[in-house]
Amino acid sequence: MKKAVSLLMALMMTASLLAGCGSKEPEEPKVYRVLFIGNSYTHYHDMPTAYFERIAEQAGYEVEVTTIVKGAHTLEKFADPFDTYGSEVAVALDEKNVGRYDYVVLQEQSFRAIGEPASFYDAVRNLTERIRAIGAEPVLYATWGYKEGYSVLQENNLTSEEMTWKMAAAYTAIGEELDIPVAYVGLAFREMYTTLPLADVYANDKSHPSPLGSYLAAMTIFATMFEKDPTALPVEGMVPKQYKAPMDTAAKNAVLNTPEIPAEYRTTSAGVTGK
Image (cartoon, rainbow, N blue to C red; front, top):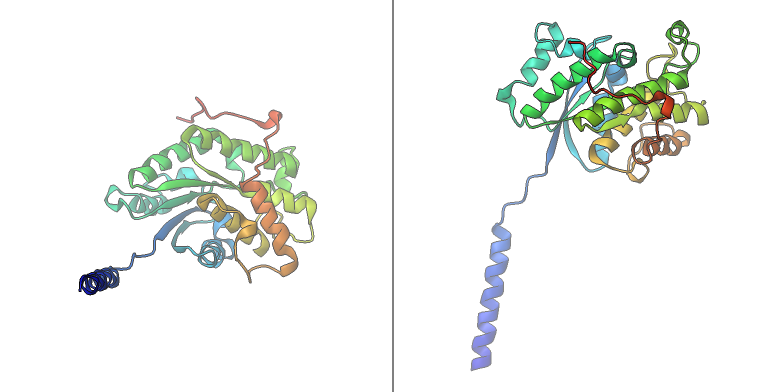
């Protein structure tokens, strides 16, 4: 009799537990909302949605991407609420929008980070304060040196390699000052340019990204944002198969094995301001 009662109680407890499990509401998957602010280096080939969003989804992340982009625009203009596109940024980063975004990707005009570093630093400081005020985190999209033969390199007595390191140094300086992660897309570009030039990451104008370059930018930004190894992600169908492994390796090296900036290029943002 006691055994029968014990068995009945055990069955009732099991049934109760199962009922409880069945009534539990499933957890909603996290949706990451990402805002991209930049110019043609961001919107070429619709990088944020055609590449970044697809990479994220194939990697198992649900993302919603928004962009505020304008060719040749600087972060200084994006930070200005009286500028046409700066006013869009002002609305997006208004204090009423707390929780609207998880990450905001900032991309400076291609040469300004080293041509006018004080203005670059001030704009990043301004935007970072406003981004964090709404509960989001900034990510810096560090772009690349122009391809050899581009006129601006010659005008400034620079090589592509020198410009790449100077860009990385400028983004590193403000990134360290404000504790912002830097997506070193330019270093990934440099690796591809020097090790596999057939996989041309540059457009014909020697400045903008090719479709391969936009993929590499998106992969580097995604891996930086979510601290992932690009070579371990189940991402397919966006670049020719023969280029995928070396491109993902270049992104990995830029993110997880970031090369040390040579001493002659290192700089600091401390005390550097245009105001």
